[in-house]
Image (cartoon, rainbow, N blue to C red; front, top):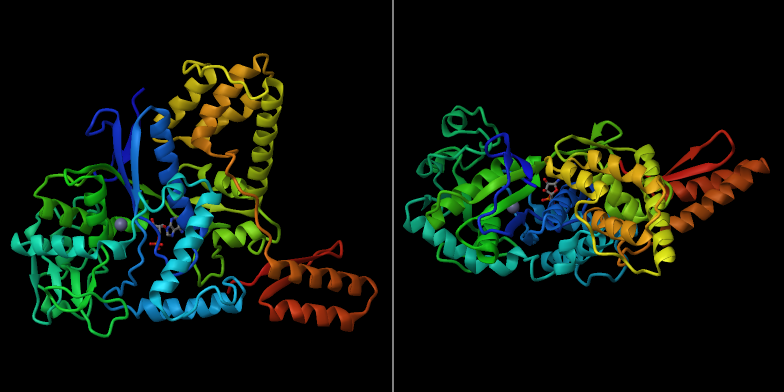
Length: 496
Ligand code: AMP
Ligand code: ZN
């Protein structure tokens, strides 16, 4: 069966064909580890996971690599990410999300990055993001590849694709790569006229072209800094992915590169330019696949709107008021097509919880009936054939699920065969894996809920002073209180 994928590079659906027969080299841009990952991040990551698992269902041997961005990049013109991170760490400690004593020095960027890397892996494993079980082999950290980045920068300078500007900053020269803009459509002409946006900065006058981007910045004062031929400083953001993809997956190009839609420009455009120019190759990745953004209750998820949820706040119930099993969040995040903006709602989560429960019950029933003995899987089984065909159509997961759900409800006269089929389906969905851990409870949230019960009791006794006192304790802990008509009290983390 031929897999069709929508390639952002050509803006069309294409039949997937790997460089090496039967093998796929897949690279996904990973998290920046200066805070907990939010469910929007996980929407993009789990899309990469779904793609990998689908390729595996189609018998490809997949080498998947995802980076950890642990260098505190200062984007030109922006405020210092490092102090932002230290501030966020303070906030996370205050709200109890980072326990006291969890890190020795909350201002040390290495400790901050390490703490959130572990937190990311923990969340990712709960969500059955396969690659998180392959740390550190396939999950490299940018700080371990500084040497490779410097080598690539030197090669780019040697080949006249990069230059050292007056102030010592090393820039990539976009004019040296006429194909710049092939992915995003932000061609040199458009960028020159400012149409592409996001290229102006204070260093404009020192650059040869406004879209030239930083490869190395000498800066003695930066907290994370390394020695280099261009002075003590730190690398630009884009170079890390070119280097890690090249070193771990091969310099002669990769099959598929994924990320969220916001990474198309400038990040992925710059990755292509660096990799092609440093390696002297025509292609970096043959297929570029991007996931659309996650919305919350119809609005773009953002911190300023206060609708910003970390995965762990969803697990513990802090986000929605009740605990959510990681398998339910996984299902919720993968169930809609990656090229549609996904809308995260409480109702969606409730629906997902119902489906996941049905899947769990179905599996345990089959396990019971068969004693865990499965038949050899028959790839031509009608359900599996339809499920695979839907996924082969640009990962049409909703269509695939629309086949699976009614099938679960049907009679299963041959449970050994059904269990084999279910296991193949679940190898893609990743819903009932043994390693799936239960949701953790959050001690602070439990305490807050107890105050909620006190408040409810006090109200039923019409003891308004006691009710107000309990309410105040909840508010002081940073939670919102909503009163429901039936007298109950709903508590949610205030995220504004
Ligand atoms: P970051 O940690 O910010 O570097 O982002 C990690 C990944 O999450 C990238 O692939 C982003 O494109 C993706 N991402 C960020 N916000 C969202 C969102 N709201 N919905 C989907 N993906 C997102
Ligand atoms: Zn990247």
